[in-house]
Image (tube, rainbow, N blue to C red; front, top):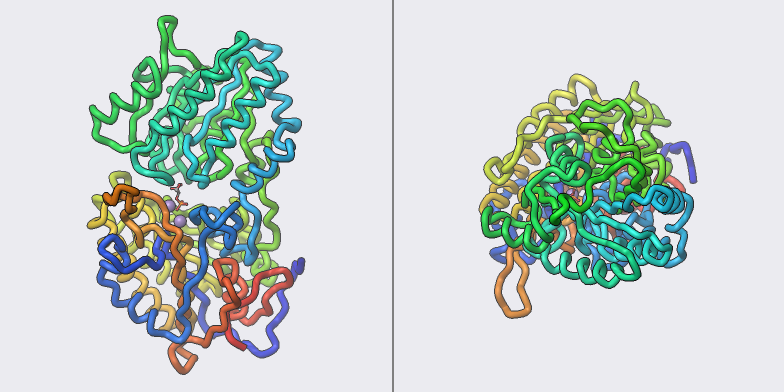
Length: 540
Ligand SMILES: O=C(O)[C@@H](CO)OP(=O)(O)O
Ligand SMILES: [Mn+2]
Ligand SMILES: [Mn+2]
């Protein structure tokens, strides 16, 4: 692996910057009524489709390091591939492999098991309960439960975050039933395994990029302190909350499972806690709440002294958490690191919801800049929910700031993420998602024009689909709102006013995907595609 960029023998970099725009969740759909990208009025995207430099890229499955081609893409694996220029085996795959080999039951697991065997306190498992394979997989949870039983752990408590964002919007009961069956089977020979608390992932525990610590506080109260509305079972909680609130899984309020003696699973001194999500963005804040001695993001109450482990290490710079079951994907030599080494100035910009995507994920799950003197990271503060009431989100403010920074900071390479197609697509609201795509298209046009005026090049792509598929066809023929990402390909277009047709000719290798974008950007900047990187998309 090269650690230094080499000049390209023939490519001349532009006078201005190379700006890579990620349209989060804007894939290429079927063009039907449920394809919000096709339904939207998008003069800029339409123009890009006519360029010689337009193509489509794979953004899901094995092309982004997921276990199989049935797996959707997501922001983590998408931005990892964009920034690393290679296909890296991702958390979903690494955890499954570590379960198969037994490597997952290493030192961190041992510490947890030894702790609870000594104290008599429960082993607590906290995480997202679904088979979405974006943040977690229920099979991983079940493997941990089976092993705990095999090792004679007497008490386990599971704290379940309801999904409905990577899986159908109201599918929580199916996963709860499946989990309850496993817990009942394992609750024999004196063992006592139960669900202890839970709530919808968008309002309980799984905040990211410090958008709203209240979310984590609600989770802390329910999982750790046993504080919250009580129910006899998770099924009863979900059924009642569906009826009372009309909300879907991702937004259901927190709940606590209690019996005649009170909450069944508060987390106390001497317990062990495993956060079984493998993806870091939405796991880091709870990790900090468990690990940091000094902490003032919310009142924790007395912090229980527990043995804490993550499914993996979520942040390689901050080394969070300190103990983890599976080694994280090793992503070194990302394009950000190589450009920093070559002294090229970089700007990364997005709004809060996607800020870490263009910094942390782009840099291989590292939160810090490689060279703070030549990198500027700009976060535009996001609006609060409900986002479907503001589908334009902060696209205009991001655009204003980006254009201002082209003159003020004068970066040579820019990466920007527009969150709208994804964040509004996840709400399942077709009308709002059409508006979201239109807002992005407007800003896209502004950026392209500003970059052209400064003699730069724009590279437009997306990290995975979402807005392009707002419905699923159920087996019975009925339509069902789709809140999750799609498996569709994503657009790739390059605007270079120096090229005769408005963009360079492309020669995409077979099965070209997101991992080919880094070499493409580096080549446009006048460098050779680095050794080990996937090929550039540019024709010779
Ligand atoms: O919101 C998220 O956490 C995921 C979906 O689970 O979306 P994205 O990968 O686009 O960030
Ligand atoms: Mn995304
Ligand atoms: Mn998403």
